[in-house]
Structures are given as C-alpha cells and as structure tokens.
Image 1: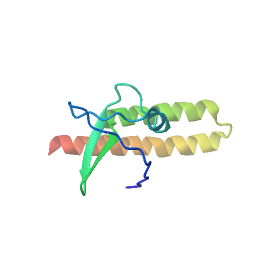
Image 2 (image 1 turned 180 degrees about the horizontal axis):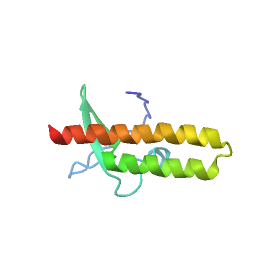
Image 3 (image 1 turned 30 degrees about the vertical axis):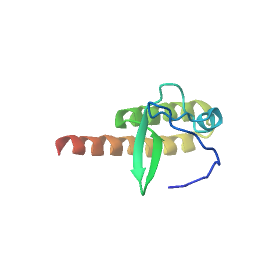
Image 4 (image 1 turned 120 degrees about the vertical axis):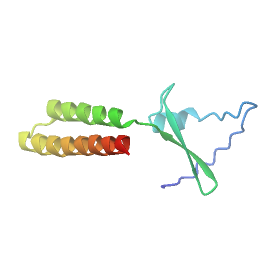
Amino acid sequence: MNEKNTGIIRKLDNLGRVVIPAEIRRSQGLVENQPMEIIINDGMICFKKYIADNDFCGMIMDLMQVISNRAENPKLVNHVNIKLKEAADMVRYFAGKEEQE
C-alpha cells in the first residue's frame, strides 16, 4: 500500500461518518454516490473505490474505444487493444471461477 500522510484530521460524527475533503475527492476521482470498499489492514481503516469485475471489463472496452479514436499509429492501437482484450478476458475468467467455487 502506498501511504501518503496528508496531515488532515477529521472527526467522526455521531453516525460514524467522516468527511473526505473535496481536494482529496477530486484528486482521487471520487464522485457523489461513488461505491467505496472498506479495507482494514494492521489497525488502519482504508477506503478504496469499488469497481465490480463487470464494471472493470466495461472500463477496458471504453478505454479500447478511446485509444482507437485518438491514436495515430494503427499498429500501436492494435497491439494495445489486444492486450486490453486479454486483460478483460482474464477478469471474466477469474470472475467465473469464483462463481463456480
């Protein structure tokens, strides 16, 4: 885990909520209603953007489209698209394995 001490201190409210400062939300690409995964590790409580496997595959396909639309080198576009498709296939494979177990 890549830790960075921001020096920002926040208090829990009476419902156990903590406000993540706007500058951190912006820098980390967090938006309102963003699903967050809670991870507990060695006494630390960490929040991580939650991306479901099927969302990840969709993101890969979106990335492939953006690269195809913006890149000028067709060989590079093809190579990157092949690698991204392989990554999406791996995600689908491992997601299917978990469902079988």
